[in-house]
Structures are given as structure tokens and as C-alpha cells.
Length: 296
Ligand code: NDP
Image (cartoon, rainbow, N blue to C red; front, side, top):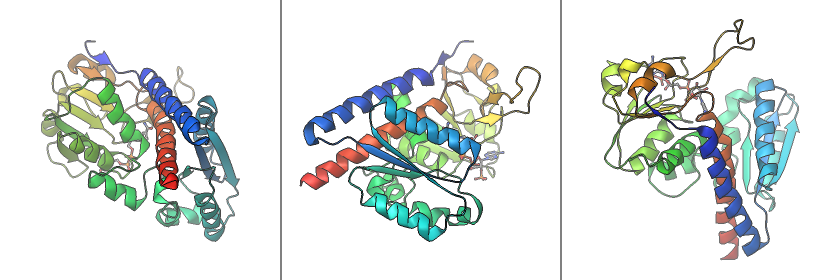
């Protein structure tokens, strides 16, 4: 293996350190602790784990945290009324609704998350924040791509003038990742399921981001020698004797690609760890903007 391994653990620790430092500075200046409210509807076990991790990260950084647990029977009106309360709650600077929402609420996801005030939208999903990102203006950016970008910066990977290829065009990962790389003056190509001769495109990439949701989809022969490969995918393989819960793998054939790439993120232990750490940064950023605006 020749590639430099970009360790999510190392970068996540740095993000948290930055967030904690900025949070303490806000406390000194305004006497206010940045606060996050997470709303979870229903009992989905994976969502429960994600919410617990977010709450724990807040405790770790001594941020204020509230978890609002609502039953699956909650109506859209009740849910949006709760969001409205949090929108006007001065202790809360960031709000997120854990997705996916259960049952009929899932079809109203856009309307429900869109109820969160843009300045408290720490997931960066609100159309106002999406617009700001595309226009290159400051705003809250979805945590996974924002974390990938900050990792590239801290790792000293040159983005200005680089050829970047993003495989995947979701609103959560692919599209914001492409906008962020463009903002850094990379020449960006976005690929998706209709892309023809994908391997020829990915082989052009100095920075290759895989956000597809298919295990081992990016093979070694699709990677340019020396490229930086960011594997966003988190896929669980069927259980086997060694992995009774199913092995976690990314979208990249790690063993093969690591022979060709210059730098690569592993799965697990890569991008997955950055997301919650970046959420902490978004909460502090949101608090800083709100507190500065209140002072004016
Ligand atoms: P989506 O399913 O929303 O998007 C997948 C994208 O991959 C789509 O744009 C799709 O194209 C594209 N795609 C599918 N098949 C192909 C193909 N054969 N060739 C080229 N492109 C293809 O997934 P997400 O963006 O939400 O997530 C992607 C992965 O990242 C998942 O494994 C997910 O678990 C993981 N993830 C990890 C996070 C983390 O914290 N590390 C956070 C969020 C996601 P089209 O648009 O044409 O359908």
C-alpha cells in the first residue's frame, strides 16, 4: 500500500478542538453557550444511535444540547409547532430533524425541515442555505461535504486548479461537495447513474469523491495515480462468520485503490467520523452569527 491514509479520527479531533475553542470564546464575549436541539420522531434504531452520538458530542464539547423525542403518531402540525418554538428559543442556535422521518411525515420532509430558520439550519438543507452555497456566500453547509472540504484543507491537498470528480449528485453529499470544490477553484465534474464511460472521467481526477452507496464501486483502475480519494460511502455487507452484523465498507475498493492513490480515506474510520464533528462546528458558527446579529 502506498497511499497516505487520511484518518477521520485525527481530523474529527481537530474539528472538535476548533469548535470547543470557538465556543469558549463566544461564552467569554457574550456569556452564552452555543446550543443544539435535535428532534427525533419514532423509534428507528439507527436514528437513535445517530442522535445519541450528536448529543454525546455536545456533552464532550460542553455545548448546550436538547433531544426532543416525539412519538410516531405526532402530526405535521405538532411537529412544526415544536420547530417554531425552537426557532424562537434563545438557548438554541442549531436545530435539526433526524431523517428519515417515519410514515406519512417522510413525504413532507422538505416542508418540515424547511420550517427551521435558515440561521439555525445546522444541517444546511434549507433552500436559503443551498442558495448561499451555490452563490459562494457564507451560510451553513451540510456537515458531510463541509467535513470533507475541511479535511482536504487541513491535509494540505491542493484544490485550486485541481481536476475534481464527484460521483453522486444527492442534495446531502454530491451537489454541495461539488459547490464547495468549485468555490475552492477546482475544475469540477459531477457524475451520476447516467454518466457514460464513468471510468474515463474518474481517471482524470486529482481529487475523486465517491458518494454512490454501492460497495467497492470505485475500482483501482478508475483512480488516477497519485489522486486523493475521498470515500463517503457507508455500506453494510450481508453478515458472515467474521462479521455477524455485516462488514462496513465504502464505495471504493480500498485495498486496490490504496495501491494507486496518493491519499485515501478508509471506511470505517474515515469520512463517517467527520460528520458529527462538523455538526459541532456548524452549531458554533450558527451561534456566532446569531449572537453577532443580536448585538447589532
Ligand atoms: P443517494 O442514494 O442519495 O445518491 C447516490 C448517488 O449515486 C446518486 O446521485 C446516483 O445517481 C449515483 N449513482 C448510483 N448508481 C450509480 C452508478 N452506477 N454510476 C454513477 N453514479 C451512480 O446517496 P447519498 O448521497 O445520500 O449517500 C451516498 C453514500 O454516502 C451512501 O453510502 C451513504 O450511506 C453515504 N453517506 C455517508 C455519510 C457520512 O457521514 N459519511 C453521510 C451521508 C451519506 P442518480 O442521481 O442518477 O440516481
